[in-house]
Amino acid sequence: MARHGIREYDAKRMLAKDLSSYDGRVAMVGPGDDINAVAEQNPWMKEEKLVAKPDQLFGKRGKNGLVLLNKDLAETSAWIEEKRNKEKTLLSGVTGTLSHFIIEPFTELDGDFEYYLSIEMDAHGDILRLSNKGGVDVEENWDLVVETVVDPLKGYEADAIQKVIDDLYPEGQRAGIAKFVKEVFDHYEKGGYTYLEINPFTIAGGEVIPLDMVAKVDGTAEFECRGMWGKLDFPAPFGQKLTDEEEFIREVDSKTGSSLKLTVLNPKGRIWNMVAGGGASVVYADTVCDLGASKELAIYGEYSGNPNKQNTYQYAKTVIDMMTREKDAQGRPKILLIGGGIANFTDVAKTFTGIIMAIEEYAAKLKEVDARIYVRRGGPNYKEGLAKIKAAVEKVGLPIEVHGPEAHMTQIVADALGQ
Image 1 (cartoon, rainbow, N blue to C red):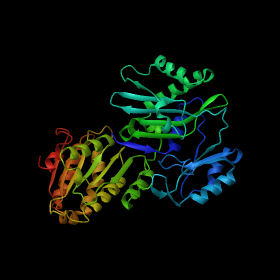
Image 2 (spheres, one colour):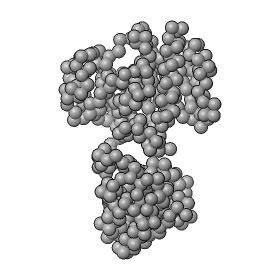
Image 3 (cartoon, helix red, strand yellow):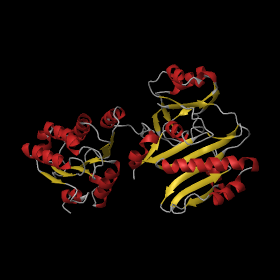
Image 4 (tube, rainbow, N blue to C red):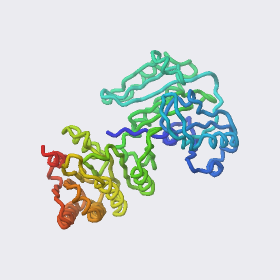
C-alpha cells in the first residue's frame, strides 16, 4: 500500500459527490494562476464572502496565521498575492514555499459548534473517531474523542454508532449528524482512502457542513477509483523540494490519462526499479527491503494505465539517465529491475518499445556502470514484448534475464541480489 496525502481541494471536490448536505464549492489557486480568471470559472467568488488558506499538506494553519476569514474577492486576492510564492516557516520548524491556496464561501454558523470526525484504516478494521470538541484544540481535548472500530466483516453498525452520537451531540442535531457520518463513511469506503479527517464539521442553516479536511488515499487503488478521483494530484509534503526529474515526470503525468510516478530515494543507490502498476511497485520495493537492500533502493515509482510509447520512453529515459550518472562507489554492478504483475489491458509489447528506445540510447552509459537488467512481466502481448527487449538488450551487449508469468513476480529481485 502506498499512502498519499491529497489536497483539501481534491478531498472536498470528491466528498461533494456523496454528501447530500455539501455543495462542494471550492476553488484552487496555484502558483501562477490569475485569481480573477479563477473567479470567472467560480462566480460565487465574486458574490460571497470568502475563506482562503494554503492547501499544501500541513495542519494548524490557523495557529500559523494562514487562514483568511470573511473577506471579499479583492481582499482575498490581495492576501493571497502577499503570501503566494513566499517562504514560510511553520511553528513546527518546517520551511517551505506557499504556492497553492484553497478558496471557499464563508459559512455563517448556527452557533459555536466545532465537531470532530476521522476515519483511519487499521489492521483490525476502520477506526471511526467522533468528538464534540473539535477545531484547533482537538489534540488538547483528545480524551474526549470516542473511538469505534468498524469490523470489515460486520460493516457499519448504525445502532452502535447512533449511541455514540446520542451521547455527544445535542438532540436536535443528532439525526443530521448520523446521516452525515454514514455518508462520509460510505464515501471513505469506496474512495480508496486510508485516512479521512474532518475537523471541524459544523452546523449551518440546519445542515452539517465540513470546514477543514485532511485525507490520504491508497495509491494502489487508482485503477478502481479513477472515476471518483479524476485527475488526482499527489503533492510533495510542505518543505520537501522535488528534484528536476520528479518535476519532469509529474509534468508528463499531468498530460496523460495514464499514471507515471517517481520519487527519488537515493540517487547513489544501485537498485533501480522500473515497475508497471501501483500495487506491483509496492511489492517490489518491499521485497528489496526484505532482502536487506533498502539502503540501495534508488527510486520508488510506477507506470500504469497503458501509457503510450512516448510516455514510457520519457519515463525510462529519466530513470536510466539518473542510474548511469556515476558508478557504484564499491564497484558493484548496477541493477535495473523492469518488473510488474500480469497486466489486464496494458499492451506489454508497446510499453516495452519505449523502454527499449531508452536502453538503446543509453547503452554506452549502462555499460560504464556495469548494468545488469532483469525483466519479469505478463499480460497482453507479453511474449512479444519479452522477446523484443531480450533481443534489443543483447544486441547492444548488455546482460539481461527475462521471465514471464511462469516466474514469481519478485523472483528477479532475489536473482539480482544473488539470493
